[in-house]
Image 1 (cartoon, helix red, strand yellow):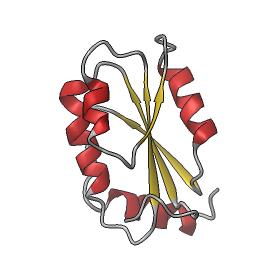
Image 2 (cartoon, helix red, strand yellow):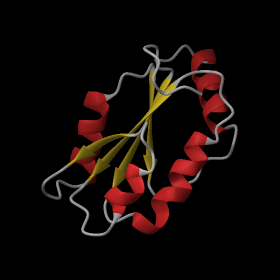
Image 3 (tube, helix red, strand yellow):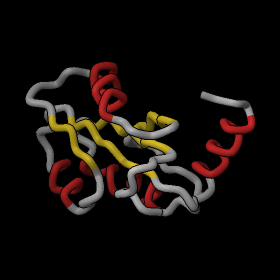
Length: 116
């Protein structure tokens, strides 16, 4: 899974506020996906006061959108979607962990339905 390619199958967008304790598990589940296509991961940090940014720094391929103030969940998602390049977009909560075949299943089913 190469997050640097120009053709992106899926943009995984994660809104974060003070998620230092849960971000690693979420991101590890994203990067362990069994997918033969490229993804991008975008995290909007909503002015966290914990060490969320230090956790994110350990993932150099993650695009971090850092907010100077807490703009809330909806605006965070809107900003990530505006920055996304993927054929599909997955809005993922920072306290969620994906099963290893989650993205491949979602992409296959979405394409079978003719979406988007």
